[in-house]
Amino acid sequence: MSEVVTAETKKSDAHLLEVESLVKEFGLRRGLAERVARTEVAPFRAVDDVSFTLDRGEILGIAGGSGSGKTTLARCLIRLIEPDGGSVRVDGIDIRAHKGAELRELRRRMQMVFQDPYASLNPRMSIGAALHEAGKVHNRPGSENEGAFVSRLLGLVQLTDRIASRKPRELSGGQRQRVSIARALAVDPELIIADEAVSALDVSVQAQLLNLFLDLREELGVAILFISHQLAVIAEVADRIAVMQKGRIVEAGPTQEVFAHPKDEYTQALLNAHPHPDPRMRIAAG
Amino acid sequence: MSSPLLEIESLRVEFPGEEGERLVAVKGVDLAVEQGEVVGLVGESGSGKSLTCRAVMRMVPEPGTISAGSVRFDGEDVMALNTRKLRDFRAHSVGMIYQNPFGSLNPTMRVGGQIAETLKVNKGMKRDAAKKEAIALLERVGIEDPEHRYRAYPHELSGGMCQRVMIAISTASSPRLMLADEPTTALDVTTQAQILKLLGKMRAEEGMAMLLVSHDFGVIAQACDRVAVMYGGHIVETGPVETIYHEPEHPYTRALLNSVPELDSAGNVQRRAALAGHPPELSEVIPGCVFAPRCEHAKQECAGVSMKLEQVGSDHESACPVRPYADAGARGTAKAGKVEA
Image (cartoon, rainbow over the protein chains, first blue to last red):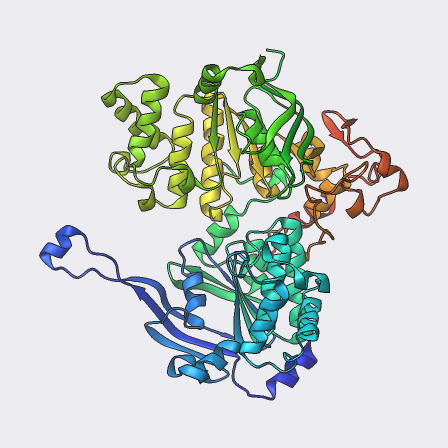
């Protein structure tokens, strides 16, 4: 992996992704009494002053309970929702300062994989067509030849070529998620944002997909922002972890260190709530 | 008192296929739940665990049918109940909670009203009494400020709170058995721990038995006394939860456990051993052992295996006659040592 990283780093010395003081607020609807009195209601800060960096080929895990702002953060990074403050720089380029073709090129470099692959694939399109379309839209080299282009992508996610002619509904959940990953890879991204990408899958399939993410990092040198509420899953793949609570990063550091010596109360609570599969290690009642 | 509270025998659930063939999703399941016992049903999606659970209530989704087998509750044959008695059985004897609490609650009704409705219909309570009892139930399932929450709509509550409301509704008539189908899967870990604790409390206070369906062995380990492992429509192994975790006999159980991520107190986690391949499709007919195509210990004789559970230890049964780990000893010992360190 290290060779890949050094080769890539020559492009620029900056971090691949640099997030600084990112803020996203959602307005709350005012209640009747508040509307009558014309009082201002403080907006809800879903992402509250979040800063972090991510290097090429690195896997950063973002952990947190539901409502902690993980997904909002991910969506702000590629401007699926507009952040209200702070900056997101990709390779030194501020994504908030660009629009049109430039923004599209920045988005090509950061691809997202969602929790439900069924909802993110067109049910009427064959897998091959869906993968090819992604490459064609961004004019990727090699996309002129659909067969070879699709075959290479399916190979990357360890699926056979036969899948190309199938429709999403004919695939299992694990296969569909592999296709979603292949579609992200179709545009040669440098960063994959995986938002709960393995949460809906069976444990055995989950293990296969986590191994796939690690393989892709080795083969392609792609960086991964891995969002999950499952701490054990993050522990398996991430080099570093950031724990979010109420929109803020409450603790961050090398994964193993954070898990071994959690300093923040919330991190400790998350770790303690993790159900261990050994019945001898039941969470103490009380 | 000698007979179990719930006894499922040779249960088969079938679906009609597109070409008139019969797709068998549950292929002869035997399972018993004793009074006050918590039994876990664990397996991957498509293994038939949810269907088995629903068959207890005779609530197999259309066009599926229970084509063979029997379900006895407290000695009574559930399959033979007429419509009225079936309704009574569902109302008073068994409670059920599902993965998605929002989906099971009426979005246009206040949650308190939904609990009260259950009490009025099932227990014949009058309006005021039902309201009082509903508030008491909300309090019992750990909802703060129950008088206020009584008037909330489901969308105003979090997933964890909705699941508490569901538990309140399904325990309103003090059922002797709770069917819990992935009750915490949609919740985050801290809420999950609270809900498991609440279910444990219900069991301790009321002696309520439970059949807990989950794909997560962590959840099963937290809550269950005994566990049955399902694969491809069959129960492949059953035993006390400790035995299953530390000395699994069936290769599938072992593979499933090996694919569960474990976090030890030093913050270490091993890269999991992924189980190759995928579970069989409904239309696939596999002769003999259904797990053989994915099994690293498969032998020629496996094609002739009947999938019958055989005794392999005290209260421990496995459907694998090869028994590749019979002399291998406990699985979890090395790990347990590491946790200590």
